Length: 478
Image (cartoon, rainbow, N blue to C red; front, side):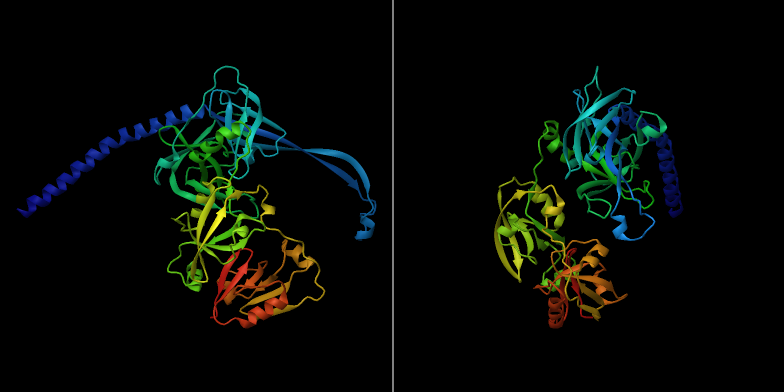
């Protein structure tokens, strides 16, 4: 009896396997047909964008160039003015029959001339109608002759991790002399991704879609599409170590773009809410130092001068736990919530300060466009007497900030001391402190120079909260 049961199970499994293998080719063909349809339907609305930007510069002739003396090299002869043309390439998406095209702001930034090439090889001059640096979106317009294909914008709020993702663009149109777009296929790898500013990228991105569909240089501004042909995102960036696609591409959710497309078409300035705080997430060490139950909340590391936050009385070291009774879990949540508010709207912040709960009413301000204005900084003056502590405190070698040191580390700091070096495997290295960090606070005591630094460090007992321009860290005793 048992043998019959076993035999039946084996036979059933064979039948199931046969059934699946028989249907697989049909399912594969259906999927293939879907990819082909999307490529044709959306691809005809994807354009190639080339830009020209002319830079003028004055040539100079140095008659004493053979001398390595600054005095001689101050004498030069003016040469002829020259022009340098820079060429840029990107992609774009036609969004209506009137000829409006959405792309990335960085694709058309500073362009003197914009040329759009359609997949059918038609070529048009384009004009910029509106752009927004913060969202990295722009709208350009061509004057079409005849009918124009345009894409269908979908709903990025409906997508989930694991959904099919199709990236369309024309990254190599200029090189291969072909106006037809290229297609790559993958899945939605992650949602709500953030890309902070880096030394090579002056923009910060938030709430992005991540996909493993290959996004190559020049794909910027092209659409990310679902399997039904709905545009769910605008391709914007890749994470790469080699310079090419490595399976980590990012797109701006189309719902975020929809909110500002009409304004960009009309040339309106896009306004964003702003508190005027430099914030960071709370890790386990910070939670322990502040006596928090968990890592929820946002730590304020600095306050922008004359900002809404400063006017409302917020201070560095405050922990924001709610906004209008909505719980704030991390920096991403606070930024997204503030961006939804109107300029001039008053909001109530729940704040933990010195382990006590406070409430502060802040009027939402307008986010400045220029990042350099966010924190008022002054160029350091040469110190009359430079003091140093050489590896005398938990692995840190620090110094007053002189002009030479500021130039060496490429910083502009209002006050504080600079970390010259960090001893390997020291407590400072474990805390994440690195050369070039500017320390402006130790255990909530302001540090303007090495004299303040020495006094504050000498008073520390146990773990210390170190305020740096990159944020707070906990420097442990051992």
